[in-house]
Image (cartoon, rainbow, N blue to C red; front, top):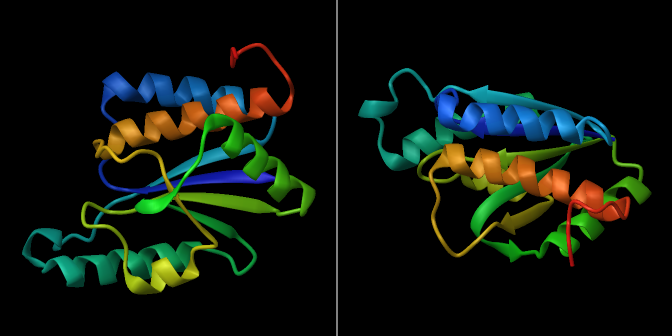
Length: 157
């Protein structure tokens, strides 16, 4: 199984980039994992919220394969504990999913088409975080889930 961590937005700032790289490399001990940062459309500043979501949605849907399992990070999604995420990942592995795509949408969320395409909607928190911190939290939580599944000591209970 492979993870594609997909995010709409600007490249990572240095203060989060190092952490993201560290955790992504650690995930590599369990599964292949790659990040893809998708730049917003060039005319994003002049588009309405809805038009921007539509354009970003088109970009996202072009990147997905039919068989990808899409996990949309969404504030209205289901909250999972770290153990719950570990179980979720293990279930996908047991189902022989080839690739799980974790998607962090744009500043205004995602289009209805992307929402409909999502296999699972996941909320990290009721709090709102900057996109770049979500990237760091996401990579750390996936790594933590992998260590939980292997019964390793990173996650202390």
